[in-house]
Image (cartoon, rainbow, N blue to C red; front, side):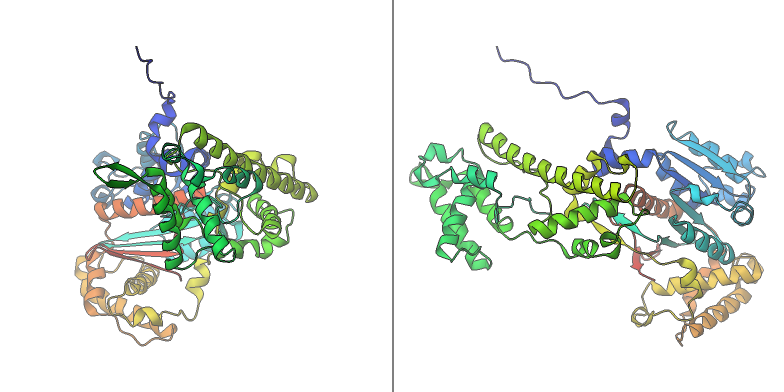
Length: 535
């Protein structure tokens, strides 16, 4: 009688609840998310949609800052507001509805405008990991942008108007540890195996094995054996050109065919995998340029007491790269055709070497932290292991201040404005719309009998804006008419899509995973097109 199959480990209630997202950013990212504090300014349709997409995956807490009361217009566009909410605090009603989505999340609200908070409570926004602002006037935006830039708190500005969406991320310095590249070859280091790996692979002589024994040999041992033969015939050089790689692959194929019957020959599965690895795993594993730039950055070379955990670990990593010429080993081995004992032996060799390198960086990083007078627990063993495993994915983004962007006397848009269909024209219109809102305290076209006069006013404002930047372009009339016909209205379907996009950027910032937007996103719903721009 066969023994029962082993049971899968039991999932906790939390892992069941957040199963899908744990597959995206793992326990490490989820922990950061659950400890995060997010502030939303203005509970518009877009604002509540953004928060919805953050509350559901389980952010730690949120606070809504909004001094407005619920209006009939809000009811028509905001999914979270109902008819009996008219006249009530928009911040309070939205907070109550959002908290119903996830009991794990804490929420609070302040029934005051952002302008009032900035003027009267100096350090309020400094307590948040991210601040999100929707439907902000230019005056409030500039003040908030300056304040958060000085506090080094990320700011995400969003606007949904008619069939047009806009996101702008302001972030002073952002570091990414786990970028989740679309494709990446296994980190096998066959170009330069360390002693323990070389000793094990050298112990397997493929040509001395019979056909049955060959079928159980790990693909890495096969590739290593014929790679050595290739190097011996080519002055110790690795195959670089396509022809040289084809030559190596043919050597593997010639040895791996077995007779199936009726004079048919098949390539053993492990040899087939060795041929596959010959395409991607025999090159010298160089340090990527984006990682080199980080290791050569002044923040990495000249540490101070204010240096973050990231930069201290980078400094320790820099010393290892200078000594060994390569980044730490990932320590993971892809699944492959081999007998269990051989595979486990190989797996242990890779894991042990990766662990030794991580321990070396941990010791050096803790020493650097101690030399700076920082607490003993500044650097943790688990963080260093995570850092080393993803050291090839490190990215650094240094953003720009929105207030600086708005106060520039010139913007280099020449490459965009040459294309009449470029979405950058919507950026220009949104900037003009914000000025219009500041001057007339209403959106263009908000009053039915004012649509035509407002079109002329908006065109005049946009023309002045372009002249300030040194351009003589004139926007197409139909685009200006289109924005004026919106009358400042939000459409729930548009806000829902844009809210999901904005929440995604907030999660990237909080988890330090995936590369965030740098720095402007525009979405044209009518044509189903979008574009990103670095302003």
